[in-house]
Image 1: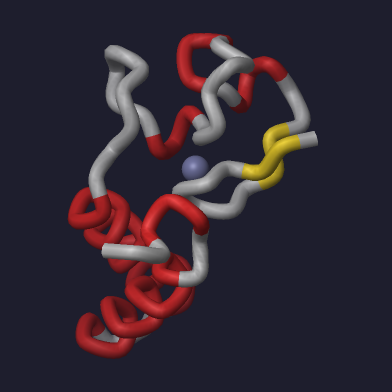
Image 2: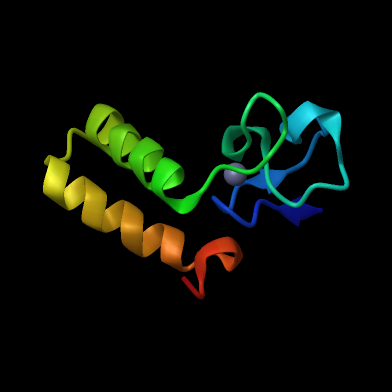
Length: 79
Ligand SMILES: [Zn+2]
């Protein structure tokens, strides 16, 4: 089983892959509608909003947390 290089989500089903393409190493949430991978800024923005909505975090804290979490993942380690 693979996990997404861009968000860490385990990809257990074909439906978790972008356009059902299991050769990809990132999940559908990290892909654009055309199947290409989102960039760091897009993921940072998306995760920041998620923390604000679901954990009621302050915007600054949410963004810092999202940054730290994303930087641990293989897709963003060296940028
Ligand atoms: Zn992902």
